[in-house]
Amino acid sequence: MPLLSNITTLIYLVASILYLVAMIGKRQRMGSAGRWVLLGGIVLHAASFAVRHSLAEGTPVTSLHESLSFFAWCVILLFLLLDLRFRLSVMGAFAAPLAFLLMIASALCPDVVVQLNPLLKSWLFPVHITFAFLGNAAFALAFGAGVMYLIQNRMLKSKRFTGLYQLLPSLDTLDKVNYTCLSVGFPLMTLGLISGAFWANTAWGSYWSWDPKETWALITWFLYAALLHGRLAVGWRGRRAAIFSIIAFMFLLFTFLGVNVLFGGYHTFEAFAAL
Image (cartoon, rainbow, N blue to C red; front, side):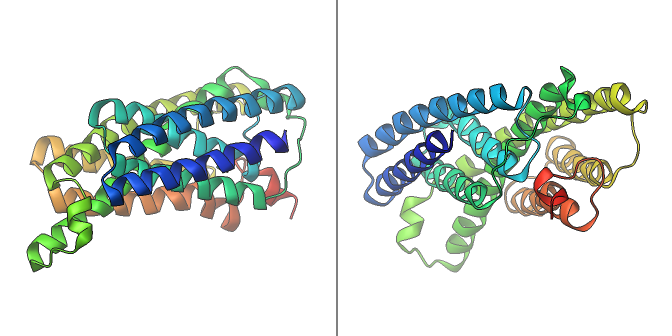
C-alpha cells in the first residue's frame, strides 16, 4: 500500500515537471504527455484507495494522511475534467504540483489503518466525503485561477511585461476558469453539507449539532454563496471575483485543517486525536 502511494507521488512529480516545461517552453506535446501521466496517476491512486478500503473495511478518509491523499486525487480528477474544456497547460502547472505537495504532506503524517467506527460505515458517509472533497478541489482550482488573474492583471496595469506575462492565459480566460470552478464547486459543497446533515441524523440523531467544523463549513458556504451571487446578480468579474475566491479559499483551508487543530469535535482527524 505505501508502495502504491509512493509511486503515485512520483508520477505527480513527473507530471508537474512536464507541465512546467510545457508552460515555460511552450511545448504543447509536453502538456499532452503530462495529461496522460496524470491520468495514469489517478488510476494508480484509486487502486491504493481500493486496497486501503479493503484493509479498513470502510471509506478510508478519516485520518489526516488519508484526507490529504484523497484531496490530491480529487484535485487531479477535477483538473482533468476542466482540461477537457480549456486545454490550459498552465493550470496543470498548478494542479499537478499541488497534488504532489499534498501527497508529500500526506506521507509526513502518521500512516496507520484504523478500523472505522461503526457510525462511519453508513452509505451516507462516502457520499458526504466525496461531495465535500470534490467541492474543495474545485475551489482549489478557482483559487489557482484567481492568483494567476491577479498576477496577470498587475503586470498589465504596471505595463511590466515579464516572461511570466507571456506564459499566463488572458484575463478573460482566467476569469472563465475561475467562474467554471466556482459553478462546479458550490453545488458539490452544498450536496456535501446536505448529505452530511442526513448522515449526522442517522449517526447522532440530529441533523445539525453546531460542531466547530460544521459551523465553519457553513461560514465558508455562505462566503461562496455570496461570491456566486455577486457574479450572477451584481456582475462581479475579474479582480474582485479573483480576490474574493482567494479569501474564501483561505476560510476553506481553515475549515479543513485549522478547526481540527484548534477546536476538535466530531470531525477531528484520527491523526490529531492520537496526539
